[in-house]
Image (cartoon, rainbow, N blue to C red; front, side, top):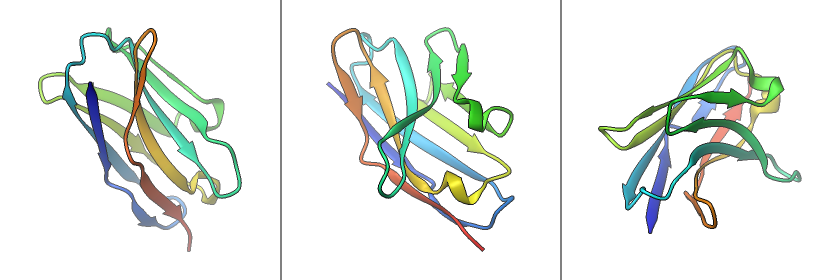
Length: 115
């Protein structure tokens, strides 16, 4: 089992920055990818960014150049640095650990971008 706990969300003005953290615990040997997803009000949950066990990362087109995913394996933490935030980035952000069969989710952290 893998447990994930997100933190770092909040209210920020357009153009601002936030850094989300995902604290990871449990047996992570089976995890292939670490992902960030988000779910805006009235919309389906969507994938945002991914980092693998070799620290290779990929991003949703709309966040490329603004968001950076990273992982501190020694500290068992994953991060999402979000810069130049836009109102359309407003959502609950979730971290996910993806194994071949199973997926593990955190409880989410709210990010609101508004003036």
